[in-house]
Length: 249
Image (cartoon, rainbow, N blue to C red; front, side, top):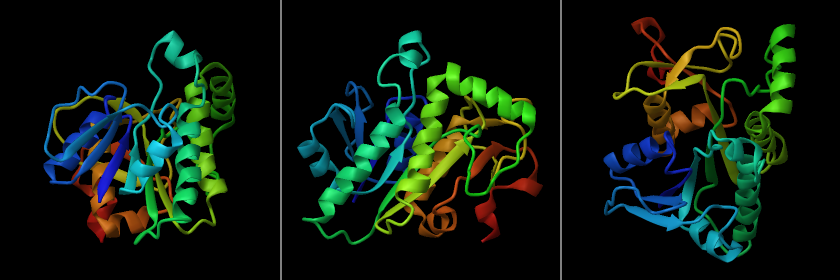
């Protein structure tokens, strides 16, 4: 079955689509305008989770077993402060609610998998990740002044809390640090929690590495099973000593 990509025309979303297609996977991409390069395994559907009708979304969801969300807010005044303020959270909620409707008429062979791109500034409250008082204060200010950060937190907390006991929905929240552009995939490290302060000592993560990890989660069952229900933090790394965690399997 196909992989559904949300935010497929964004800087990271396009790279996820490219990685999936290079592995001969079928992709359904929700796009504001169908301007991704054509490919026989790519179906572009114009619209978003919040603009398409429920009937159309249900038909799309019935065709997929995995969703990778790279949704984010445009870095403009309207994109940051305009509607929908909770774009990511509301999209994930709609997906989960419609999935429950689908189960009443469709028996899935596997639970629906959701892979959500977030950020290292979004805490995993299940682990009570320690942060300094200064970072707590900075995050409190950011929540008030930068709605996209609060959106990321609420989307993550929805998956953590609202579908915690729903065994037909499985999720992973991928947390990159400061995103940068690189042409090629490089070594990257995965950690259960941040290794450095996202505010005062941020690391870097190339978008192509995030895309590679997310794409691998859609096709490598052992990797998904390891991180299922967790919020891995991904950093670029320079040394062989800290290669990505899945190499330890």
